[in-house]
Length: 196
Image (cartoon, rainbow, N blue to C red; front, side):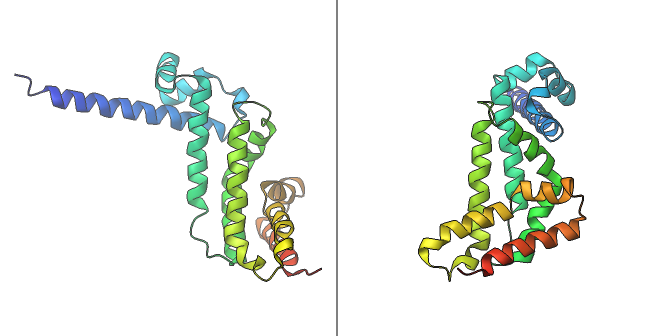
């Protein structure tokens, strides 16, 4: 009788999925702390509690490992940025800062590796998603603008809400989070309120 076979197959599948999750979680965790170029497969294997061969078996290649890990981070970021009512500048800025305080340093480090063919496409996805998010959340501020002016104003809003703006305020200028949020709000409101 093979009554135990379906159970063993299910247990094997669950163990394989657990291993897969641990490998990609370990890679994503390391990406939050270091440049991709500074992460070795041995580091991922140690973090996941597996061998390098298991990491490669699960991911297929180092490039695929980090592609999936970056996608995992992007999904977490998207989850953080949900729920803001379009036009609510205070909530938008607060949500961006929640995100940047957690992921800003890793995003800036990732941007430094943009020339890497394995990283560049991921950076571009992040850039597109950021612009879409700004347009969705701050779009009502553009409604009264003439159609020909909206793209330029949206460009300015994308810059005001960017991770580099957060980095300048928090890391380079050493501003408190409250002061940095106030500065970003001021930029957004000034851009949205200015008329030519």
